[in-house]
Length: 316
Image 1 (cartoon, rainbow, N blue to C red):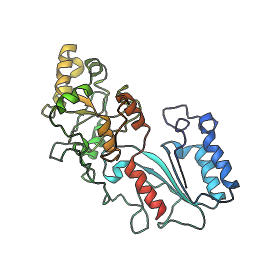
Image 2 (cartoon, helix red, strand yellow):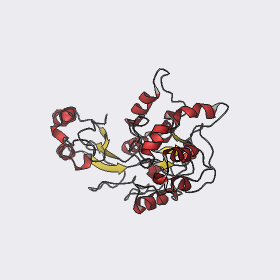
Image 3 (cartoon, rainbow, N blue to C red):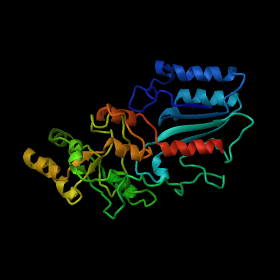
Image 4 (cartoon, rainbow, N blue to C red):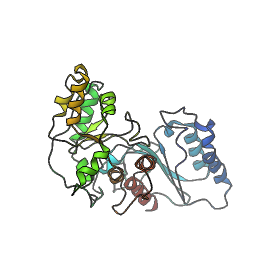
């Protein structure tokens, strides 16, 4: 079996998109060159990469090699939300089986955006196998939809977020948050956004509440960069976020900061991101690993439940 995640830098949408000309793609191209020359083909292949790989020359070379070797294969573009997890992390996946093996579902030349249905025909977005709530997370309670219009947000963006928050097939973020016990509030102080960050990036942040059913993809730059690296949490839910942001850009800096600080905006902790990514409750980081390093390795990681489901599908 080959389980691989080729370097994503040649294919990521925010990079140079060097594709097969990027030196970091050489190891992947070497595997493609090696496969047809093997006396015994790997029985299974599971590949993962960023969205963007599906339009690359590397992907074209991959499919040609698999066809030449007689593999059965299926491509996917999947996000954890299809399993009821409130975090967007859209990734390209490919499953392949060497001959004479075949899949228990009908494969398609189209890239599937959900898991095949249990009946074996087509695809399904059913969430009947939503993973259990992490044991150490807070219980679910009712709340609002968390919809807010920001200065740099279009009405279409707001509508999309409200639609995501009303999707009851996806669980609420509060189920994945760390339980606050004695001293817990004090521990969370270190994750509050500093005044300088609030004043500079308030209009660019993706803010969610515990009652929301959505969050954006967490990257390795989370906690260091603000824009586009992951959502931040409004931990003081008694405050009205829409009121805080109303005409915010017109306020003096002192008043602006006072409004924003009332929301108690904070970063998700590494443990909470690990929960959203499906890591088990007994998973721990090495004690000497800094918070910044924990964010980096999580940002480069995979959603455990999505990959587990794919492996099960591949081996069935």
